[in-house]
Image 1 (cartoon, helix red, strand yellow):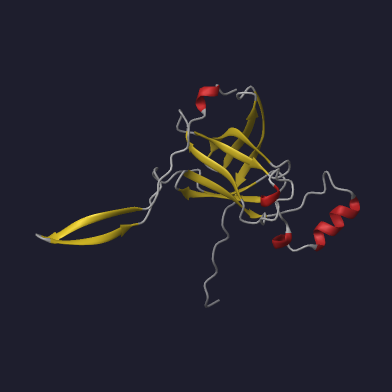
Image 2: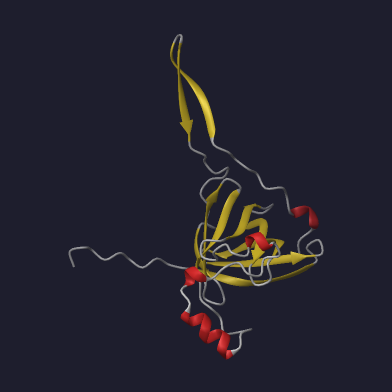
Length: 181
Protein backbone atom coordinates (compact mmCIF):
# COMPACT_ATOMS: atom_id res chain seq x y z
CA UNK A 1 0.00 0.00 0.00
CA UNK A 2 1.20 3.47 -0.76
CA UNK A 3 0.86 6.53 1.43
CA UNK A 4 -1.09 9.50 0.13
CA UNK A 5 2.05 11.67 0.19
CA UNK A 6 3.64 9.54 -2.50
CA UNK A 7 1.76 11.15 -5.34
CA UNK A 8 3.45 14.42 -6.27
CA UNK A 9 2.57 17.04 -8.82
CA UNK A 10 3.94 16.14 -12.24
CA UNK A 11 6.79 18.21 -13.50
CA UNK A 12 6.21 19.95 -16.76
CA UNK A 13 8.94 21.02 -19.14
CA UNK A 14 8.21 23.30 -22.04
CA UNK A 15 10.37 24.07 -25.04
CA UNK A 16 13.19 26.43 -24.17
CA UNK A 17 14.47 29.36 -26.14
CA UNK A 18 17.77 30.90 -25.23
CA UNK A 19 20.01 33.62 -26.55
CA UNK A 20 23.56 32.65 -27.33
CA UNK A 21 26.21 35.29 -27.88
CA UNK A 22 28.17 34.38 -30.98
CA UNK A 23 30.50 37.37 -30.81
CA UNK A 24 30.44 40.70 -28.99
CA UNK A 25 27.35 42.62 -30.05
CA UNK A 26 25.84 39.72 -32.04
CA UNK A 27 23.26 37.36 -30.65
CA UNK A 28 21.59 34.41 -32.28
CA UNK A 29 18.25 32.86 -31.32
CA UNK A 30 18.62 29.11 -30.91
CA UNK A 31 15.77 26.72 -30.25
CA UNK A 32 16.48 23.97 -27.76
CA UNK A 33 14.18 20.96 -28.09
CA UNK A 34 12.54 19.86 -24.86
CA UNK A 35 14.39 17.09 -23.15
CA UNK A 36 12.56 15.04 -20.56
CA UNK A 37 13.42 16.01 -17.02
CA UNK A 38 14.83 12.56 -16.33
CA UNK A 39 17.58 10.36 -17.81
CA UNK A 40 16.70 7.24 -19.84
CA UNK A 41 14.87 4.68 -17.75
CA UNK A 42 14.21 0.94 -17.76
CA UNK A 43 10.47 1.76 -17.75
CA UNK A 44 10.75 2.88 -21.38
CA UNK A 45 9.52 0.42 -23.98
CA UNK A 46 6.41 -1.45 -25.01
CA UNK A 47 4.52 -3.52 -22.42
CA UNK A 48 1.87 -6.22 -22.99
CA UNK A 49 -1.11 -6.03 -20.64
CA UNK A 50 -2.87 -9.10 -19.18
CA UNK A 51 -5.52 -8.82 -21.90
CA UNK A 52 -2.77 -8.71 -24.62
CA UNK A 53 -3.12 -5.05 -25.59
CA UNK A 54 0.13 -3.05 -25.60
CA UNK A 55 1.16 0.23 -24.00
CA UNK A 56 4.30 2.08 -25.11
CA UNK A 57 6.08 4.16 -22.45
CA UNK A 58 8.38 6.92 -23.65
CA UNK A 59 9.81 10.19 -22.28
CA UNK A 60 7.45 13.15 -22.31
CA UNK A 61 7.55 16.63 -20.74
CA UNK A 62 5.88 15.33 -17.55
CA UNK A 63 8.35 12.43 -17.13
CA UNK A 64 7.20 9.31 -18.97
CA UNK A 65 3.91 8.86 -20.81
CA UNK A 66 2.25 5.61 -21.78
CA UNK A 67 0.10 5.40 -24.89
CA UNK A 68 -2.11 2.58 -26.11
CA UNK A 69 -0.13 1.20 -29.05
CA UNK A 70 -1.96 -2.07 -29.79
CA UNK A 71 -5.58 -2.94 -29.08
CA UNK A 72 -6.82 -6.48 -28.50
CA UNK A 73 -10.54 -6.66 -27.81
CA UNK A 74 -11.20 -8.94 -24.84
CA UNK A 75 -14.36 -11.05 -24.89
CA UNK A 76 -14.84 -10.55 -21.16
CA UNK A 77 -17.68 -8.15 -20.38
CA UNK A 78 -19.14 -8.35 -23.89
CA UNK A 79 -22.03 -10.38 -25.22
CA UNK A 80 -21.11 -12.78 -28.05
CA UNK A 81 -22.79 -10.38 -30.49
CA UNK A 82 -20.87 -7.36 -29.16
CA UNK A 83 -17.60 -9.29 -29.30
CA UNK A 84 -18.27 -10.40 -32.90
CA UNK A 85 -19.10 -6.82 -33.92
CA UNK A 86 -15.94 -5.49 -32.22
CA UNK A 87 -13.83 -8.08 -34.05
CA UNK A 88 -15.12 -6.73 -37.37
CA UNK A 89 -14.19 -3.11 -36.56
CA UNK A 90 -10.78 -1.67 -37.44
CA UNK A 91 -8.87 -0.61 -34.30
CA UNK A 92 -8.83 2.95 -35.60
CA UNK A 93 -12.63 3.02 -35.14
CA UNK A 94 -12.48 2.46 -31.36
CA UNK A 95 -13.11 5.66 -29.40
CA UNK A 96 -13.00 6.71 -25.76
CA UNK A 97 -16.76 6.20 -25.42
CA UNK A 98 -16.76 5.72 -21.63
CA UNK A 99 -15.08 9.04 -20.90
CA UNK A 100 -17.30 11.12 -18.57
CA UNK A 101 -16.54 14.22 -20.70
CA UNK A 102 -18.79 14.04 -23.80
CA UNK A 103 -16.29 16.18 -25.74
CA UNK A 104 -13.63 13.44 -25.33
CA UNK A 105 -15.77 10.43 -26.23
CA UNK A 106 -14.88 10.67 -29.92
CA UNK A 107 -11.10 10.60 -29.49
CA UNK A 108 -9.40 7.49 -30.85
CA UNK A 109 -8.28 4.79 -28.43
CA UNK A 110 -5.22 3.85 -30.48
CA UNK A 111 -2.50 6.28 -29.39
CA UNK A 112 -4.48 7.45 -26.34
CA UNK A 113 -2.27 8.54 -23.44
CA UNK A 114 -3.16 6.32 -20.48
CA UNK A 115 -0.18 6.88 -18.17
CA UNK A 116 1.72 9.86 -16.84
CA UNK A 117 4.66 8.78 -14.67
CA UNK A 118 7.49 10.35 -12.68
CA UNK A 119 10.11 8.90 -10.31
CA UNK A 120 8.88 7.63 -6.96
CA UNK A 121 10.83 7.60 -3.72
CA UNK A 122 12.45 4.29 -4.66
CA UNK A 123 14.37 3.78 -7.92
CA UNK A 124 12.14 0.90 -9.06
CA UNK A 125 8.85 2.76 -8.44
CA UNK A 126 7.24 5.25 -10.81
CA UNK A 127 4.36 7.27 -9.36
CA UNK A 128 1.71 8.76 -11.56
CA UNK A 129 -1.78 8.93 -12.95
CA UNK A 130 -3.51 6.11 -14.79
CA UNK A 131 -6.44 6.61 -17.15
CA UNK A 132 -8.69 3.55 -17.35
CA UNK A 133 -10.64 3.61 -20.63
CA UNK A 134 -12.83 0.74 -19.41
CA UNK A 135 -14.56 3.06 -16.93
CA UNK A 136 -13.40 6.49 -18.14
CA UNK A 137 -11.75 7.44 -14.84
CA UNK A 138 -8.24 8.58 -13.93
CA UNK A 139 -6.63 7.11 -10.81
CA UNK A 140 -3.54 7.87 -8.80
CA UNK A 141 -1.19 4.94 -8.92
CA UNK A 142 2.24 3.63 -9.66
CA UNK A 143 4.26 1.16 -11.66
CA UNK A 144 6.79 -1.03 -9.89
CA UNK A 145 9.65 -2.60 -11.83
CA UNK A 146 9.66 -6.26 -10.73
CA UNK A 147 12.45 -7.13 -13.16
CA UNK A 148 13.89 -5.87 -16.44
CA UNK A 149 10.92 -7.30 -18.39
CA UNK A 150 8.13 -7.29 -15.79
CA UNK A 151 6.20 -4.43 -14.18
CA UNK A 152 3.24 -4.25 -11.84
CA UNK A 153 0.72 -1.47 -12.54
CA UNK A 154 -1.42 -0.38 -9.56
CA UNK A 155 -4.31 2.10 -9.70
CA UNK A 156 -5.59 3.36 -6.36
CA UNK A 157 -8.57 5.15 -4.78
CA UNK A 158 -9.32 6.50 -1.30
CA UNK A 159 -5.91 8.11 -0.78
CA UNK A 160 -4.11 5.01 -2.07
CA UNK A 161 -5.78 2.74 0.51
CA UNK A 162 -7.53 0.52 -2.04
CA UNK A 163 -5.40 -0.47 -5.00
CA UNK A 164 -5.99 -2.82 -7.91
CA UNK A 165 -3.67 -3.75 -10.70
CA UNK A 166 -2.00 -6.24 -12.95
CA UNK A 167 1.40 -7.34 -14.18
CA UNK A 168 2.66 -6.39 -17.63
CA UNK A 169 5.52 -8.00 -19.57
CA UNK A 170 7.93 -6.23 -21.90
CA UNK A 171 7.38 -6.77 -25.61
CA UNK A 172 10.71 -7.85 -27.04
CA UNK A 173 11.02 -6.38 -30.55
CA UNK A 174 11.31 -8.89 -33.36
CA UNK A 175 14.79 -8.86 -34.91
CA UNK A 176 14.77 -6.98 -38.17
CA UNK A 177 15.49 -9.20 -41.14
CA UNK A 178 18.24 -8.15 -43.48
CA UNK A 179 16.69 -6.55 -46.57
CA UNK A 180 18.88 -8.76 -48.79
CA UNK A 181 17.29 -11.99 -47.58
